[in-house]
View 1 (tube, helix red, strand yellow):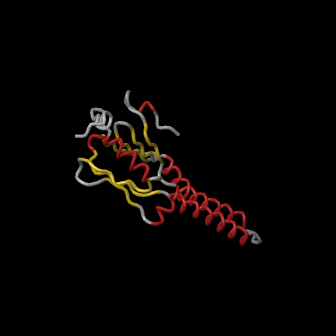
View 2 (cartoon, one colour):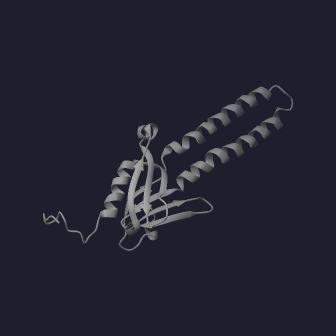
View 3 (tube, one colour):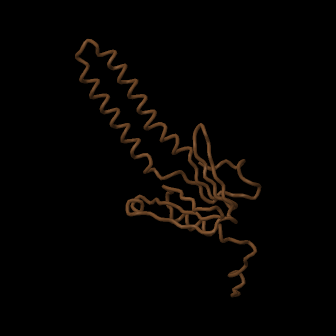
Length: 172
């Protein structure tokens, strides 16, 4: 899904658009399986009793609340979180009902780093650390293909159209 063009400047183009890594959804999916499995087991346990209908309704209500709270909400939160690198800025947008975001102009970014542990390396994600003119570095967790994003962001930060070094074979 492309980032909306009406939010970009006239000469601004999207270089990278990512959602957080799918590993954020592992726990919500496990919760879904536990709730459905546990609810089904409890429904089967109360089936022989005369009061099974109110128990089934109660189980369905509790199960629905748990699924919405612990599975649907994280899924929607994941889907509405955007990490976007354009030709002019780095943007992060997140939230469903209350949206928040940060924009960092490319000219204000001083350095870009990444880190990922063994599990992150196996899953192909990591943390991107952006140092800008602000007081402390900003960390963006669970970025898919963090090394590729790091390289692309570094290229965008250091791509100066006035810099013709390398184009004419001259050294400085």
